[in-house]
Length: 179
Image (cartoon, rainbow, N blue to C red; front, side):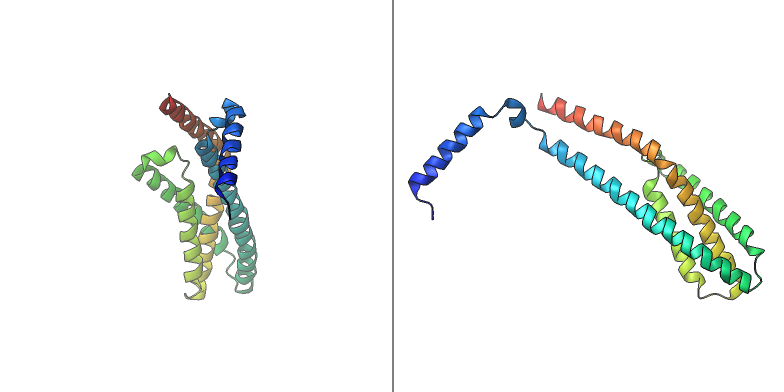
């Protein structure tokens, strides 16, 4: 347990240490640093999600779907399903851009996640449908996932530029607020 004399000495040492601390350390923008660190961590998490789920799921499911299609003599449904999936993804992307015009600045990354979840749901639900429609829906979902992956692959350059602009806006806004 601390007695009163030791507590006063600790307070005295703390005050002396604070007095000799440089002004740059005293005015360190910890909230800005926390916001920047949080953005970087979310970006890394999004990148890990993209590579682990989208690519691995797409590769393994495409191979298994191809083997199933060949074994059932449904090879002609492959290009048609892929084409329909890509076109439907483009339609959804354009619809989201029309409905939410501010999302153009945010590069549609959350919309792409939502569309990816939709196509994964289509793949899961297609397992309970007859064989011909199942193959078509699998490839439509694969085409949609492939198009989402392509759109997401082009995001880092745009998102990085928008992210840097957003961080500069945060820093300049907080600098003005401090003045």
